[in-house]
Length: 588
Image (cartoon, rainbow, N blue to C red; front, top):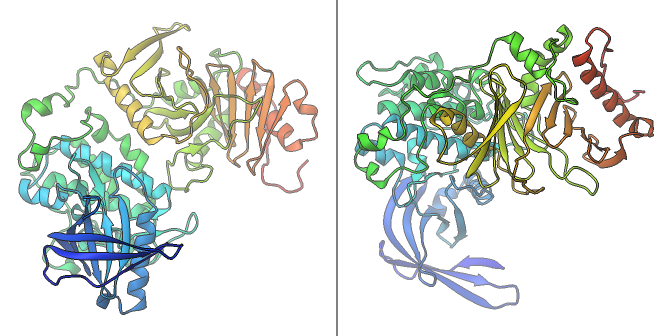
């Protein structure tokens, strides 16, 4: 079905009727009629009005672009790119793309109407926001950016005016006029574009190109602006602003009180070297976003006045019940992750020096390895295994390693999310996220105790861990669920990072080994079967007793490697090298 537009039926601005003529495949013609309502705003070559569908009575935001402004082929190409990118997106924190059409004079893009305007109008009214508000909006902005970057889209124009508020006060990222989509992982863009106050230094330099990190920089500017009331590099002269950005010359005004955590998150983001900036997952685990419990949405009254002290008090942390989740000393940490995955027993011996070095060396590499995802730092890794008959019905589907700060967050294939914390305690939520089990050891005992709680009825001393659990659960969501939930939830009992793989031991006696070359092993002690997924994603199942004798030498090699690693934990003096060369073409 093709769609065309006839002429507009009246020439007045408000109340103007626009008629869309639709040619169906069978030759029939139908019409859609819209009433153009009040003016909402403008930007670039576009003007935005309310559009009322006279048939469905649905109100949308109608973006009108005059064809006179599209005389140059480059301008029309950019518009078509904006439409192609925006219409492909579907996320609760992104303005919904509804429809587009054109007539002889204009191109019309119909979008979700956000009735509470943008953060720009909010700051204009309020001057600056409380930290709880900034945390809430930042959390939602990161959610939108994580979705975009997972789909290889860079927005390149993050600013107050492009963050809209719905009638429910939900933050929505809009205006994809400067957005671009990467064709392959590692691609760099070189177009100089953006809004002066928010533009990243690598865009201005233009020497090495830019990628997802420019959105992170703009997010840092956004956080500063919401907290302070004006952008950090703002001057009356654009060239001077650019010079300050390149020099990273900004400061926090003494007259505006902000917390140490707020200063830290801005300072960590606004770093000129894009590779040194924190990833979006790093930011979600930052104390600024973790120190308080956060409201899902803010009340509409905050559009005009700050939240009341009583409202803020229910979310602000007092500090006395905070749980310290910082990484323990190196020796105890390495001893802990060397626990035996087969017998579920903590050994007194430590990893060999070779294993410790391998573990340290590969942490960042494991965090950026994923089946079908981009290679930005701290990207969640996705398992390459999909259920096949005879294989495990439950496995670790998605994970991200934050052991440098908190621990390992993961999502199981049945939708249950969990965290293995650095203090060796564990937490796992059911697939609905309304209850969880907390597993810990008391004192020096080896026996684990498991306690079940509901949300929000749980001990105050677990507040920080539950907050982290909720962050991981929200950002490791999966679309397709596999495997049932039992009353006693399955969780990761042990995990280990080596030079070539990450190993999980689940409480249901499944051992999962995910290699960096995207092959995978899943060993099930109950069924005595091993499932192997090769580098191309093809699965095969073998009896565990005879798996080493099969003709599949690639799988046998990985089984030997896994055995060597497990043996080295128990007997480091006698273990072999665990040598494994996954990329050679003429390997034995």
